Every structure is written in structure tokens, then in C-alpha cells.
Image 1 (cartoon, helix red, strand yellow):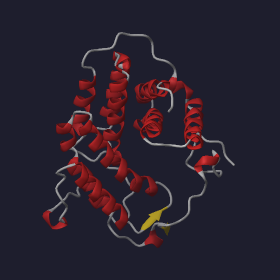
Image 2 (cartoon, one colour):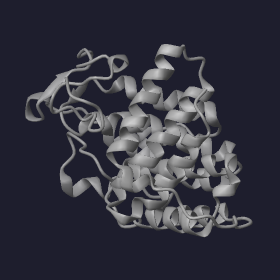
Image 3 (cartoon, helix red, strand yellow):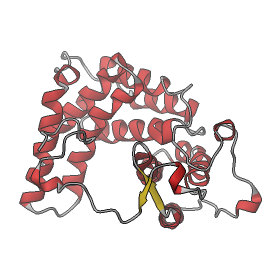
Image 4 (tube, helix red, strand yellow):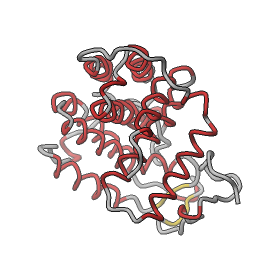
Length: 267
């Protein structure tokens, strides 16, 4: 299992992310997610070592975001401030769910490291979440005219199931994922992948003790599913087959030039 020092690094990266664009928030959560991925799964040593190598490279490349926070006494009930910031936009689809994803990972990490619930960290995380208040729904969403993306909603004729429990959300999300027959190059892979992480963040938020806030976000995820699963003409979007093989083996730690693994060494 990875050292809990990576949780501290992750919270630090999250708290400093507001210094840039909201999407700079990826760095800290990537470290937090890697820590829990290793802790919650029975990984072999080779895989765990590969994960650790990648997050070490990320931390090294974006070092200014991971400079240690000054020593402060933690604030009692500080996590509630993050929930308050999230409750403002959790019901809206913002940046394909990153408002929920970032906030949930922050809360999970802070529950395990309460000593980091200091004003500077909490304030930075809240600014990051608040920065997504006016963000677009994200995308791209092939098959949708840009004018309709911001107004699309779920209607009775969509026949979407109620999100009655965690299992219902999981099944609906995987069923939706299987309906996507084409993946396009560019940002579209991220749009599809975050169908899973947005749903997981809502379920995790409920598990962490905030079911009311999670429930507020259910409609936003259903809207996300509706936007992501409309059929379209692949040739208009540079489509590639759904079963296109991976471009690299993540266990090797190397990726081709131009890959999105921006913190990794190139082959």
C-alpha cells in the first residue's frame, strides 16, 4: 500500500489548484485517486510500483502545486465548507462532473487526514469548486448541436430509471457506456470515461455521509448520460472503433510522443 504521504500531497495539490484554471484541479485528485486505487484493490507489487512511478512523475512535473502547506491547526467541521460550495452547483452538469469528482476526492482524503483540514487547504478547495459554478457542461458531445447541449434535460420519454440506490446508478451507467459504439480521438475519450467517475463520485459522496448532496446531483448525471449516448456519424468526428487497442502499456511507464500522459516520459 502507498504511503499516506500521498494523501497529503493530493490535498496540497487540490488546495493550490485555484491558482490556475479549474482544470488544474486534476493534479491533486490524480494523486488521491492513485492512493485509494492502490489501497482498495489487491494490486500486485509490479502494478503498485507502476502507479507510484506515475504519480511521482506528476508531482515532480507540477512541483509548485505540491509545495508543503504551512503548519496550522485544523478547523473543526471544515469539510462542511466544501459541501456548501458543492451544493451550489452539484445539481448542474459542470465540466462533465468535475465539480463532484474534485469535491468528493477532497472530502474522502480529508476524512482520512483530518490534520490537513486547515483554512488554507479548505479555502483553496472551495475556490476550485466555486470556480466551476459558471463552467459549461463540457464535452464534446457528438451528435448534439452546440445550441442544444446547454438546454438538454431528461424527459419521461427517455425512460431513465430512478437512481434509487447505488446499485441502480452503477447498472445504468455501465449500460449507457455499452451503448456508445464509437470513440472519437481527442477529448471525447475523457467525456466517455467520466461517465463512470461522475457516477462513482456521487455514490462515494453518499458513502462518505452526504447522501442529500449526492441526491441533488442525480439529474445532472442522467443529463450527462443522455448527452453522451446520442448516435452520430463517425466520419464527421474522426471516429475510431470502440475496441481500438491501447496505444501503450501503462505498466511500462512510457508513452508515445504527443500522448495525453503529460507527466510521463515519452518513448
